[in-house]
Each structure stands twice: as structure tokens, then as C-alpha cells.
Image (tube, rainbow, N blue to C red; front, top):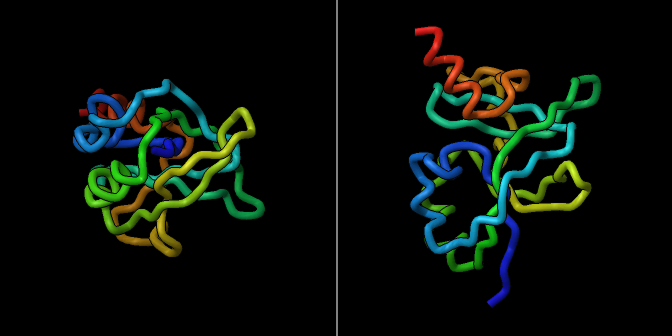
Length: 133
């Protein structure tokens, strides 16, 4: 069976609410995107990654890499991802590529979507939010 690399950066990471969808996948380790992305919070429920537009500063977004099969992707992970995200290919910090969920076009302007690109990732964003309370 062919394995694919899947970069996750939110609730699918270890300890996240949908990490169960990756229980049959192989955890490869921590990873970062290339510094050409923006990162957003959707209603403080989950994050979304998108390529920085021309003139926008890009950021590195931390996450995790898993080796997944098409079956794991199709039957377990994708059905648990929110409809605001879609599957795409991204560039990692080492220049290699990986599958990842990214924001659908036009969702950055939706109500409840906040740019958190400078927060250092989803976990640090959540930790800083909890400290503010």
C-alpha cells in the first residue's frame, strides 16, 4: 500500500480533538511549512492555512507529519475535517512537499476568522488565549 505524507497543524495533531482519525497512521515527527503561508483561526475551533498573497508577509507554521494511506485519508481523516478546509499540496521548510488541509478560497473574510500567523502555531495560539482568560 502506498503511503502519503500528510502535514497537520491543528486539531489532527497529537492531543487534538480529531487525532483519533490518524490512529492507524504512522507519526513521522514535527515539521514546519516554508515561510510562505498565513494561518487563521476559525471561530477559535480550528485553524486554517493558506498561501500568503503577493505583498503579504509569509510565516512558518509548525505542525506534524504523518504517513497515511489513501484509505486512512479517505475513510478517517477527510470526513472529520471542517468544510472550510480542502486538501492540497504545500511546501515544507526543507523544500519538500506534503499533503495538507488548507483554507478554501474566500474563507479568510468569513465571520469569526482571525489571522493568527504571528502566534507561532495552533498550540501556542491556544495557550496564549487560555492565559488571557
